[in-house]
Length: 252
Image (cartoon, rainbow, N blue to C red):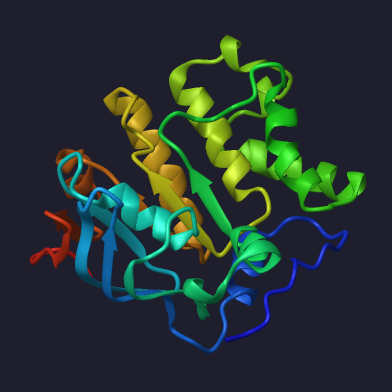
């Protein structure tokens, strides 16, 4: 497994396409789950002998009812949870071997979008986005360089100095997305990103994710919105009773 190193921070204009393509190595797989079981202390199996392969640059929907194991699967991919059995490989790194600083470095290469936004109420849109870069040691100049194109991409440039309580739910989710992508991670995980939104705002969020995918990012989205999934015509897997099933008749 390769050694994980922090992103190189240069003073060039942000190019989402180039940065994500440069991060793609010779390996074709971004994610691989092999015979993964996740059992909680109470004996409940969240995942059972799950297998999944996701290519670099792919867009994947993970569907299934509440409690089926969708969110647990995503948590395994960024190391919030660890498999009881089996292998979880992300960007060529075996998560079972990562702890401490090495796990933190892997997470810097993953953008995570949560259903409940997780914004800091006392900070502006710009400050909520910048906090990720500050934590990763980016210079003030580099942070400023990245903020403008990211705000424009999510349609919030005119609201850069607003606070979260001045924004709609859809706008707050776009701030959450901007925070996830500002460091141009090669992998984006979105856990029910449209769960609290109306259809119009939901579609806007998915369109941003699709645009990021067109720039080269691998995007994995959990959702229970079957209408949204059908509208997008992307690859779909379904989680039922802890098992992962490939859906037929969708693009792969």
